[in-house]
Amino acid sequence: MATAVRRPRTQAASRGHDWLKASAAGCQIQTAKARFSEVFRRARAEGPQRITRQGREGVVMFSDEQYDRLVPQPGICPAG
Picture 1: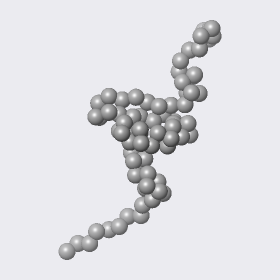
Picture 2 (picture 1 turned 180 degrees about the vertical axis):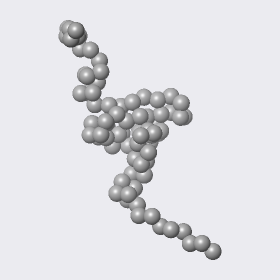
Picture 3 (picture 1 turned 45 degrees about the horizontal axis):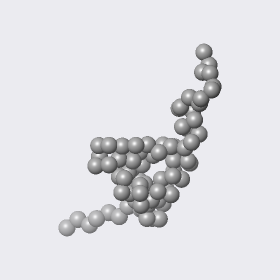
């Protein structure tokens, strides 16, 4: 009979943040709602965070600085 090999847990998993492991794939809306402060912090510190509902619909949370870079500000002429 084979015995299971134990792998060391990541720092995030050891703190109970198993949902963070697949951050590139995003997280479900229920998880994001339950852990809003953590998703907010990660968006500010690490970049955009994808949030999905039923694996189909999605949104991305990102910092206001990133938003300002993406959306032209009123009254500012684009360089050209």
